[in-house]
Structures are given as C-alpha cells and as structure tokens.
Length: 405
Image 1 (cartoon, helix red, strand yellow):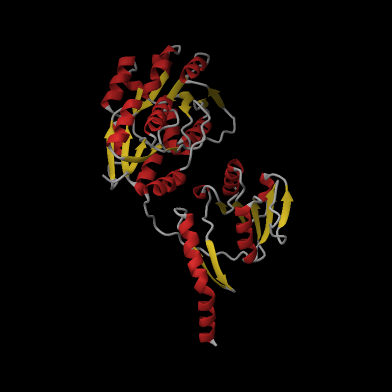
Image 2: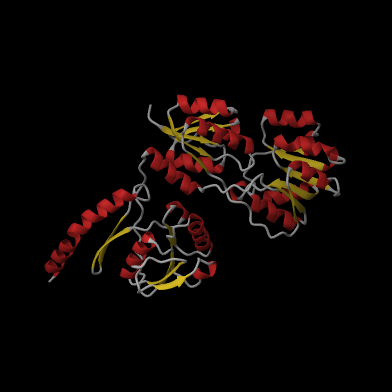
C-alpha cells in the first residue's frame, strides 16, 4: 500500500488540502464527509475515534503523515490526534484558521459556553445561538430560555432529536446548513427579534466576519466565546507543501513572473548566510536593498543599507518587496504576516508557504536571465539544476548574441 496522508477534520481547510493532496479523511459526522466525498483520491471515514483508535488507524492504513485540520474548538480531538501521533512516531502538522479581528464595539468575550450562558442571564431580549448543537445544554440554565433562545443547528435527524430532547420548541430551532452570508445572518437576527448573538470565533472560514457585521447592522450585541487556547497553527498552503514534501508528491510548476527591481526598495530581514545570498541576488537585479538584523556576517554586501537592530513593522514602509531570511522563526513569521497585510510581495526563507512568492535560484549573464525553482519541494534539487544551468548559460548567451550580430 502506498504511504498516504491522514487528515482529521470536516472543515473548509480540510477540503482545500485534500483537493490538492488527496488521502484518508476522518470526520465525526456525515455532514463533514459530504464536504470531501466528491474529491478524487480521497477516502472519507465517519465516526469518532479516541487516541487508541487513531493510533490503530495510522498503523493499519500505512499513514506517512497526519494533518489535524479540525475545528479550533475541538480541543479533545486535537489532544487525541497528538497522542496517537506520538505513540506511532508519525509526523503531525496542525492547520488552524486565524482568529477574528475584533474592534471591541458591542462584543463581549466569554471564556466558555457556561460563562456565555451566565452573561445572558443578566441580559434581556431574544438570543440567536450559533454555537453548535453539542453546546446547547449549557444554555438551558438561562432565565426564560425556552421563550428567549433560538438555536441555529445542522439539519440532521440526530441533531434535531437532541434539540427536542433538551426541550427546544421546534419554532425555536433553525435547522440550516451554511455557509451563511451577512444578509442571511441579519435576516435571522431580525426574524427572531434577537438583541444578542452568541457565537464562537470560527475565523474567516467559519463566517465570523459575516456574523459580526450583521449583528452591528441589526443593532444586536455579541457574546463571543473565546478559543480554548492560543495555539499557533499553520495555514492551508503550509499544510499542502508539508504533505507534498513528506509524501514525495509532485505539483504544478510555479508561473515564473519576472519583476523589474532596478532602483526599487527591497527589505531583507536577516544578516546571516541565507540573507546574504538573497541580498547578493537582489543587488544583482538592481534593487536598493535595506537589510535589518541585530547581527551581520563580516562579508555581508556593503552595497546594502544596513540597520543593526531587530526588525520593526515600520521597516516595510515604502518597500516594493520583502524577504524574511533571519535565523529567528518568529521574526520571519512576523515579517511575512506584516508584509502580506500591507500588500507587499514577500518571500519567507524557512517557511516558503508563509510568503506570497518563492525566491528562485537566479541564473544570469547580463540582461539574459532564467530562474529555477521546485516550488519549495526540494531546495537541493533547485541548487543542483541551477548549477548545471550556470555551467552552460554564459556560453549559450554569448552564442546567441553572436548569432544576432
């Protein structure tokens, strides 16, 4: 059996990864399975597993690597996945959507569903709950809950049965499948007469912005249940690249977009060997390089403007391009995040998928240039191919110029 990826999660992120990598997908519900069943090279398994069950699956299905792309609030599942991977020695990557950007207006944070229910006890008016069916029991402690609470849940028989067993009146159950637009969220708030929306921070993929915007427009307050921990997960792009490297899978080539950097300002964060190589290439392309680092190699190019200090977000002001090539993982992550937020193309040396472009190996003679890349899958192959091309490139260019004369 060919080694393959095991991915846990019935989320948007899970689908995006499986579309490009394929593999075995484990989900808790039939609804989660529906998200991936139409994908080629994907096998879906439905059912909840404990750590022992996960470890057995890893061993029997020839799993080479595991991605945890479960919901940010599925804390127990994430713990079980980690335990199973530690037991079997299989590498694990956590893919997690980023939290919502909050402006604080009309939003009250709660540490848990129980705390959110306690807050509702001190508020008047109807409430729209969008926390999922598993959390509804906590809210049955709210004052006058049968009359005040409206629960939006998945339209499955098991979920509807559970809601009715808790005592929810059918008229207070909104059984619908998302995604829900801003317009639909607002309509539900108005139709239920809700003055409060209770939700979890599911990130952009979970539609949190559409909920918050709708609540603001409808004049409803928001109780936002905070994430159970402050884990730093990886992006979908990072997950795809990681899985392809682990499994030795190919990918389409990158489109070699060639930029004119002559006279343009470029920031390089770092002063070590990788930053040096990137700086030499950028200077050769005519860029005005500014390098920021607490320490620089003695042979770092003098043609670059150097700032002997840690990176600061303001260093990106006026830059056309950025390169994160320091020896500090957190600094590189910050540079990538800040540059993308400002719309500045950025390459991140130690985590290529965090950037918006892949830094190529440059092969040039005068103005005739070619770039070599393996899209982050094999840096060693990129170097070897570039070296072979450099061995003949200058003579090829000279020959073509002679033919033009």
